[in-house]
Image (cartoon, rainbow, N blue to C red; front, side, top):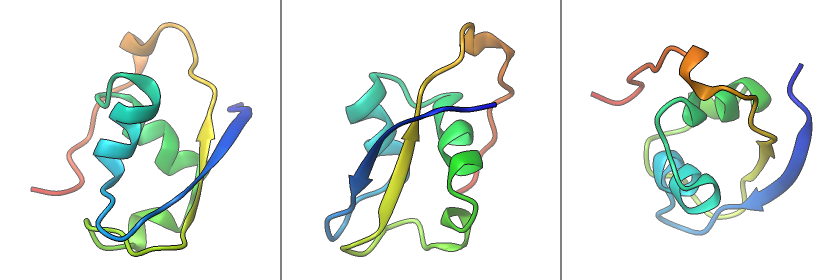
Length: 73
């Protein structure tokens, strides 16, 4: 189970991978956890609009057990 650490309020032009990098220092493996904590976030476009609250979960250890996915190719 993923615990909630904090919330992030998007600004116009934010992208999920950049939000993950800014908040966690990595994006691979973390994007998936953020998507799990925010079920409707995957329905948003790649470039997010202003005013979306994103739950930023605590990271499990180790991250190597998470299989990365590519959501925007």
